[in-house]
Structures are given as structure tokens and as C-alpha cells.
Image (spheres, rainbow, N blue to C red):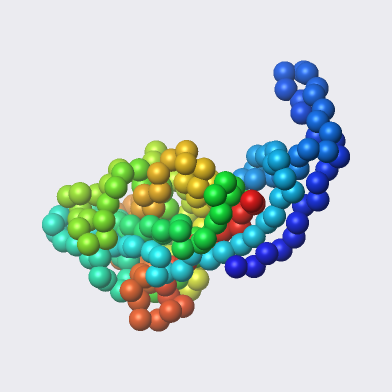
Length: 217
């Protein structure tokens, strides 16, 4: 873990709400956390961590084989082909970050590496909203997902990709929603195209997914 900076205690905090102004002297620190103003009772320490692939579970599901499980696969596959769609699933155990109780997320970045590319294809990352397990998830048991996507990345060429997943991780850490990870899917027009990223079981360490988090505590 790398610590990088300490916000000093401010003397006056001014809060504006509904036209009323209130002041508090010397008792709190203010920080910007996940795009929102947060008030802390003590000086704020910012830190960062990376959740490794060893704290990840992942799989992919196959519409053409609804009972197939791919929890031990070395890649996570995605395909938009009608009747043969493939969805990837990825989840991190945030305990691997070691954040203290009460921590608030500043930012979170999902890091993946495209190992099989197809020109013109984009992968959409969407928060999963129901439970699934690496060793049992199949197309028939695909978890539900949020109505809006968290982000996207290009699968047009191989190589490293990043996705800003700050809102999802901030909600998980705050307890506002439950961490069920994400679905990764090619939601573009149907095509005979299969792309892939390295899974947590990939034999090449650099191909495995990680989750980088910065937080305040």
C-alpha cells in the first residue's frame, strides 16, 4: 500500500443548504470523495491499493451451450453472435485491498488485457445485481445486471485497457449496493466475432485482471 498525502485540518467549514449558512470551527476536514463533498471528523489520509487477480473470480457463459461453465478458463470470452452470445463475468473480493472501516472511495479503475481482438468491437462493462459463482454460473443462470452501463473499452486490438468503475466500487464500499462484480459483453450488432481478455487463471501474469482503488480514511 502506498500512502500519498495528508489533508490538514481546516479551521472553518461552511455548509450551504437551502439558502442557510452554518459554520463549524476547527472540528472537521472536508474532502472530495467520488465526486461528492465529504466531511470528516479527523484529518483525512488518502491511500491506494491494487486488488490482485488472486482476489478475483471470473467466468464466461455461452448461449449456445446453456449449461456450460467456464470458471477455470484462462480467458474470458465475449461474442455478440445471435443465438451464440457469450458474456464474461468478473468479480473482486475487496478485502484484498485492506481498506480500513469507514474508508470512502476516491476512484477505482478496472484493468484488463485484451488477448483476442476483433476490429470494430467494443466491450460494455455493466454492474451485476445478483449473485453468481465462478464454478457454477452458466447461461441458464446468468445474473441480472444494472440498467445502465458502467463503462466500455475497445477490443479492436490486443493490449491493456482500463475502465473507470468508481461509482460501483464506491457504492459497494459504502454498503449502498452489494458487490456482485460486472458483466462484460459485446452488445454491438450480431457478428461472427469472439473477443477475449485474460482471466485470473491466465498463465501470463500481465494478462490477468486487477482493480486499482484510491480511497480516503
